[in-house]
Image 1 (cartoon, rainbow, N blue to C red):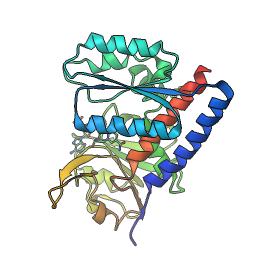
Image 2 (cartoon, rainbow, N blue to C red):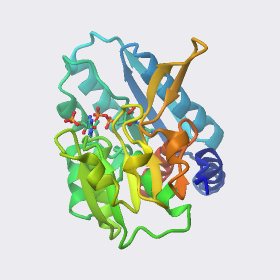
Image 3 (cartoon, protein in one colour):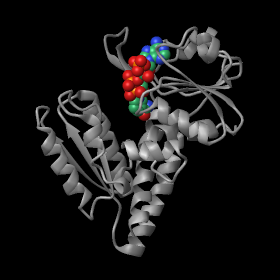
Length: 287
Ligand code: NAP
């Protein structure tokens, strides 16, 4: 029996409806709306598209947004000054620095300039440390999206054997810690994991966050598993057109799994809505 598809777009629409209603209510009560500032450095096409999508989502939710686009060769100090201005701007509740940053910029130093109460992407070292120590914090949006998508199947995370493939600071680690905090038994696999399939085969829930098409084949998936594909890779299709694919061999794995997210239309749209939710939370904490 083929797996059921987890419809990320529909789940995202549901979250958007809730966020829009909350923003309208806050506007009524305070005369103000939450504000998100996106900081984009350079002209990476994918980054531009991600930022444009996030801004579109803000407009749909009634969230104020502004874009700060700096040239790719800008000095680190310019970025620090900008972030400090945004930290002090009462219109802005959330600051999103779109990654990756150009290699001459010290990423960690820049991200750590974001005021903790405005770090809605949850990627400053202080915020991530709070996630690890189970303190109140902004959980990174992708991790929240993964949790939401798993829970949308009606299954609980608590007690599950979950394997996360990928251990980046931005995705794999926050996903692993959030699921661990929710009571799952989490195994995090990475480039140096020997016999990856031995681990993935045991997973009741398999999350892949690597960026390698077809890394996860059907032989690597336990029958009845929930499969969440975070990976996004642009490939050239047979028709010569560019398209995005995940890490999972979708058609084959669909025959083994019980639930599976598509790419596109899975983790991506829910991630954007989780960022907006964090921005509303930042506004609520500021009033
Ligand atoms: P990343 O920084 O490149 O991290 C990839 C991780 O996978 C690293 O831990 C890497 O290990 C590991 N890895 C590489 N090859 C592997 C292999 N053969 N087996 C097991 N692990 C392997 O990328 P990222 O920022 O975490 O993003 C991961 C993917 O998610 C990308 O495709 C990205 O485009 C996508 N993404 C999706 C969303 C969304 O909303 N859906 C949001 C952001 C990113 P090393 O550290 O040793 O290289």
